[in-house]
Length: 585
Image (cartoon, rainbow, N blue to C red; front, side):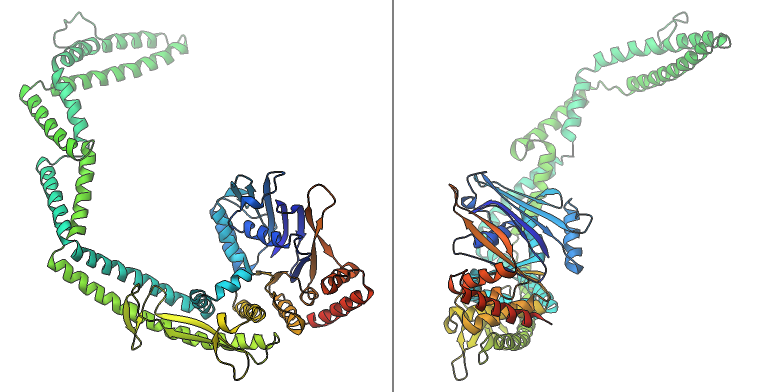
């Protein structure tokens, strides 16, 4: 759960801390006091888009910090991801998160003690927190969102089936698009292929080798300066080993080093220091002997053949002809040839290849058809369960006669999606299959079954949304749920039922509710009030926990706008007593 949330410099909030608890946390306050900033802060903390316009001019940046404590599978997943990214949870298992946004729009994120990309906060947020507001209700009216909601409810096995369909669909479309492009652009492909073959033929005739240009350059330098190199090597060889023209009386470096070593060894018994120097002279003599042998081998291998030099010149000229056309150096020419061979296979428009691609497209189309049919069957089975469970929840939300239907319909074949025959019906198939999903509401017996966007009022839509979330919560999901005024347009007994449902949801989840309804606020385990301070030159807001008498006064303000009214307080206390009895297990 989210144990604590601190917000600094965001909107009307100058600096405030929200101490949160498990169960149901309610946030109330006057209109314009800054309740929405709390939800905005939560969005920032978990990777939401930053709006520099909400940052206070002083101190010029908004900071949102939170402490998250998780358990079970979610904790293992989040901790492993944080560790992989270089952060680490605290010793007590909690995780610290923070997000900073400046007035210039720059954004920084920290997680587990390390600076992280903002996307990492989003990854953690997906696992830990689900935020629901009036915008979510609007999204729920879209057919794609309704299909996604049903897929989410259907469970992990359905998700695996859906992933397999998406993968098969992507492979099928790639083959179909490739085949279509080869047929449509056959002339252009053949012209490009002819040019590539000419280049490959030229490169193949020369047959350049990796690094050959550098090797030939070095060889040409040796051949051009062969006499000078020979003279230098001979002189050096004579100095270290006497050479073929040296007289017997001419001492070489190796002989001199040997004499010096023996002279020192003779006195090593008198002074050990001379013995150590004698050992070092022996090492030097060995090194000189090795150099002498290598100089001798160099002289033997040194080639001054003019014919070879001419061959090197001609080979370098052939390589330069390639580098002028295809790349800056020989390695680049070889790389160009590899790319050209790959491109030639892509440009192939032979009948054999087209027939092969045609067969592969047909095979993949059959695979997509089979998977789309299985996904559709799975959706229909899930739709029945989903509708039954949401209908049960609506009965507990003061809509006892309402009923939800989930229609899984074949998608009409259109211009943008290919048509396949799935379960005996021609449908337009996309990566999510060939189904349209539509949530329908029967508001009361005898009423027509209408899509949510046509059949639900604002208050009914709020309750349907809450019922769906309660159903989702029963099948897992994030441990913390945030509801931002999802009770808009609701009052009376329906408001009490929403409070009761949220309290029931809070038995298994941490629930944060921003509300204007006292009937909902009365069910809270912790009640936070956002209060506006207009005493200074700049309006600011802060958050405080209210309990006992203060809480009754806040509910009285919400009930009648009269926090000091004895009648209002009495009504609030009665509401609190009813909620307390309802919360008991």
